[in-house]
Image 1 (tube, rainbow, N blue to C red):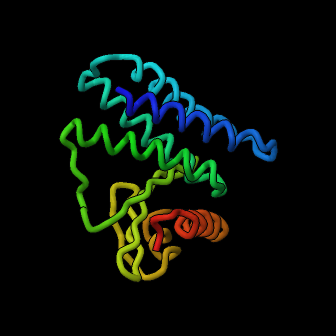
Image 2 (cartoon, rainbow, N blue to C red):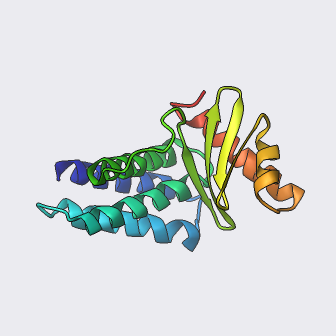
Length: 173
């Protein structure tokens, strides 16, 4: 469980750095999933063996934590926190025998207060999963418009946030 210990320490340090600059005061939409993921990482890192239920809970908590990190303005600290939570999610998926449904896509989950969606760049197109559907289009805002019913300004906010993360992440392009 040294991987979990390492991930717990790095995740907690990254979240602390993100919050320490004093310009951010994220609400419960951010703090609840992140706190749960950090608590589970800390607890499970001390255990010699984790059961299937433990791994499933940790996977879900880290997936939610990474997804809410991605709806914050990108910064080096929050990018690192999202990456660490996503790594733990991937390890849990492998341990549980869960395989990605689309190996050709590098999905990123975003958990906004009003929608939960996954986004992938496929060539020059955007593929988005949300609301039980999956849509692919050339323009990201067109995909969002097809999947969700929001105001034009909300589509713009979601598009800007997703594009900010896409350009900020090291694996992006």
